[in-house]
Length: 228
Image (cartoon, rainbow, N blue to C red):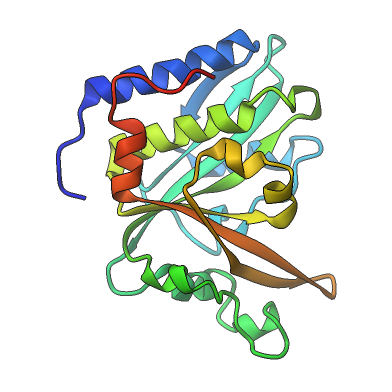
């Protein structure tokens, strides 16, 4: 995407979501130091391990190539977390890149019959500037309050302002689709086979969700964001 970003539209869009979080007693902030993010995530009770996509030893993040969000409650305890990073896939695609992130030998983690981590056809069409949105976590006492929608809105707005990517995407478990959590995120598309990992001898499949760059612009570059 090469057209200019309208900073006033983005600011108004983000303000809606920041205000919505504040109404729920959550103070949002954004960080860029992923060493700090991994440290916070590691010490946050009940949060799952940080995805390898945001682990700096397996997938380094350059300055300006990612950001993370944290929401604190009135006691300054962590209530929500989320991270976004940008991939330059001008010479490859998202499916091939996943194989690189999840170790050099994907057969160690993929389906034992075909050795493929990603079979979602659309992942092979995702190239150029691809923003990956993931590692989301909401504390149990704040679930059911539209926090996924709020955090996704912030992720979309900041990603658009910083990079105007060709795609913004994520990988989600099937139960998130079934329970309607993914619908809150606002992604226009989903497809099975986004990531297939053998974890503790069990094959887990994650769905690929995404917006094209033009769809992201239509969501963000407007006068008013949806009421949350």
